[in-house]
Length: 480
Image 1 (cartoon, rainbow, N blue to C red):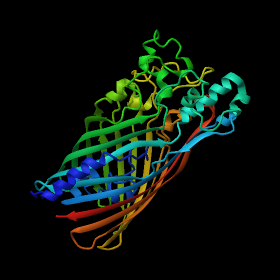
Image 2: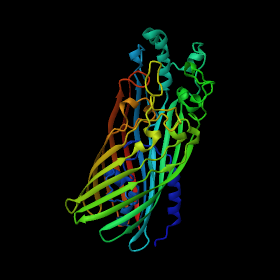
Image 3: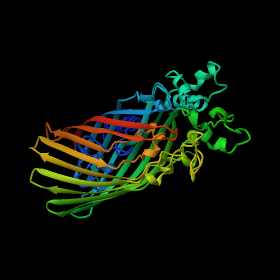
Image 4: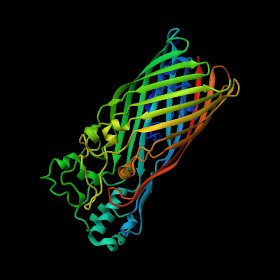
């Protein structure tokens, strides 16, 4: 058994604390890959393990990567846009904005050691995924002003609304008796980190089995959602105190909807995997991850369904790697992420009515078990990748990934907060080995621009969300 040095433990602690600060949205809101090597292969590693980060996909793979320490850093650049087409009502502008925060640093760290001839222990902590949007304008509140003007005076009144007008501004000008609190800057920040201690058994010289305990940590905050107070459980359960929600303002607002700073959630699940050589030139891999059952976000119990519940969805992956030539491997992966198994993610959002956004048939208020959500669907992900071992020092990689669109066009409005519309990714990468113990790895990802549009959002007007992404991964490995 290899002794773990003190510096190694210190790096593990630092990386574990900092990884929870990440936010990404690629395959829905899961990461495309974990570590520079996997990213170079567009995440197609369930049957082609690369390093200790294989536990994020297939825990059986640690029997094949040797004793090692892996440290990496991702520079992640998501570019997000959202628009509500208020011009169709006669306004002289559309309410649109780009999400301001567009660079995230995402560390990852892990190690792998051999306990016995056929038994391995590995650990990795990684950013599972996340969602972030940071708008300087409150798109909902500004659109609400235009909708109100149109409702009272038609297109002529909407045309008189100056761009940037908010409901607090109308109150200050004496044009509105009251406005909701918490309608300033708009956005959310969800980060998920997983700590994955893993055991894997080399059953024979061709098959391995592995299992990981998935310890989940989440951090969440929301800002600027005061316009949706009239959709909360508090308001719905107190009709006497909120007889009409006049002017869209609740007289007895919820304190569990928005602007409560960061709240934390913790939980656990499991992942099991198999890796097997079925032919001298063919290796297969399979893994399945349970749902990670998380504690509730108590401070946002009337935003997410089931009183603030936000579990991490179950998923499974299958793959095959073909040794096409002595130097070239080709990998094919299929993954399915079960977003529909989490109500806060899959429940549908509000719908349009003559009176404005409303709770549709079969849905309940925010925070209820059937409360409004983001309306996401399960997705399939298909990956194709190639790895070329040029010589003992250089390995080159490339990959491509396609996935289903998780967001239906009818669900655009709430997904201003989480515009995870990406469907296609292309990646390239390489590893350089200056000596037998050290490796430097690099990967670049381009997630191509994707847009989801709706001819009628829940505000009754067209809207759209759009995203593209870039990322650069750098990793260092020390082999024992």
